Image 1 (cartoon, rainbow, N blue to C red):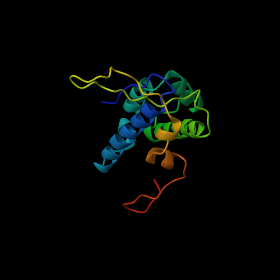
Image 2: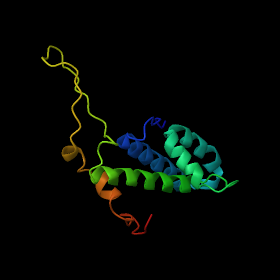
Image 3: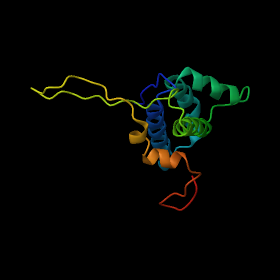
Length: 146
């Protein structure tokens, strides 16, 4: 089940949700299920799971009476997430924050539950950031661009 993302500033959760969606859609494609058979059902569900601001932006760019297409929605979400990640990389951290990790105390430990402060230098060196800042990548399995 795909978790809802409540805030546009939670870029980490948006990236995770996009990754899960991409996996599920590719799994259906590998089983031979055509995207047009489930797009009209899946797109409204996905749109309910994303923040309202992103939902509005997606619906503004759609044509009137256009049928939902999951591949178009995924392209839109990827671009939106990449733009937000790029904004983070360019030093606009006051508008977007990555989730802070939570410490859990061990039995008999001396520290309480605390949230670690966001440190942009520590959290931005990820594979997701590298991929988000580059163009289309060739598939490592078939050497085609996806």
